[in-house]
Length: 295
Image (cartoon, rainbow, N blue to C red; front, side):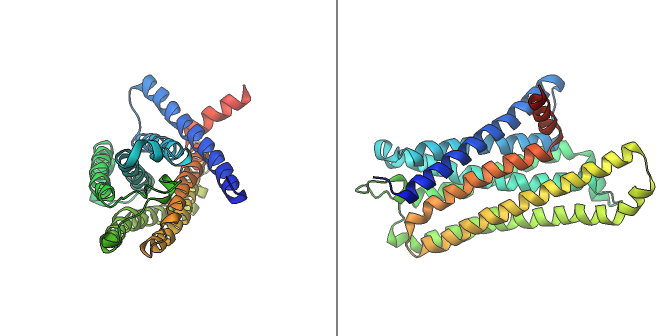
């Protein structure tokens, strides 16, 4: 029987899953239609599309496996596959968010550094390399998680109560630390440096922008400001969700494996929240949504 806490958790999870799936699917469709029209996507559009696609798959995998407790029927091997996906895709999304901040920084900040100028000229190729490198890194880091899983077969709630063997506690601690460093801390540093670079550039040049009172200049300044706000909102959401995951990982290392569901919940919170932020902060999804609402 489900208690009051389980009912509330289920209700909140279903709402977040709905928001995440609808929002991210909408983003993917908008940019797929844009690609169909122009046969190309801007570097930041490609990154946003991949972020949204990964979020949809992550949310659906969590929804199917955890909510319906399918591990009871499919066994440990299928659970290892889904756990691999639930580690791989959220970490990929984090790095893509960091690269999105970096690409916007390259696009907005204007300096005469040669590395910046070369990066701007080859930004499309650079983004493809970033995406390929991110996928390779996240696959290599996600695979060891499948080797640490053991299912509590006698449990009535297998998916939410899987555990790591006692003999593997030290390995799990090392793996969690490496995962946190390479897929949370380093992307966060890149996000903060890139976003602060944008904010500092806008602050330093706000007076010059104000002197050139032209319609195009004003709209460009407003667009850059909205981008900075969007990135700061994404970073704040990431820090909040990463903080939850870090606290849970500390508890898991002490043996409290029933808290693992909190990691999955933090993933769908980030998926739902980031979809709303990206729709509001990105021009084409926002304009498309406004047109749909006005019809």
